Length: 169
Image (cartoon, rainbow, N blue to C red; front, side, top):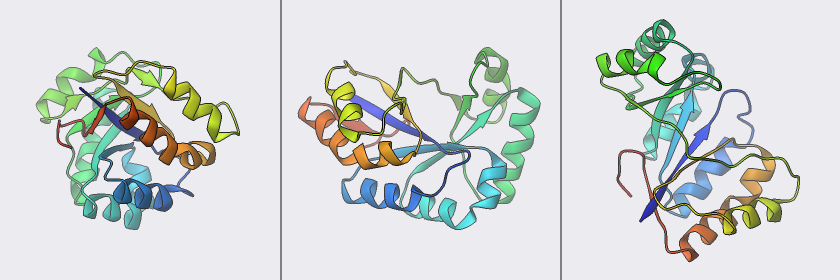
């Protein structure tokens, strides 16, 4: 029984290095979803993600954008396995294009929204939820990063295995 964690990085990269360090230290597989524009502007961070064995996926709105961004990511040397529809986009819009490109369309089953400034609030939210087989999406905001270790410890205390979206631990 396990959960996968996906981190959406589209604008705030300030805490990414620390988040990656924590994930490596705690042996947590992560998948980072981003746009090709973000990847191009944060080449060193994307290289570090790949070096640490994290998966990278695209965040997209439509099939044409998916095809174009997949080509851009390939030109950057970034291998992809997944695509996530942007907020408000029906996944069926991307499914055919994703399949053409050999990508799987991924949805989250639990959004860990950062609506508090106290990390303990996020940890409590996790402890009061059910996650078997879930995909938990979060953004690398300061409170979420501050709560990350506690969230991981809580998930493990719940008896859950942390897995990558591709199924590996």
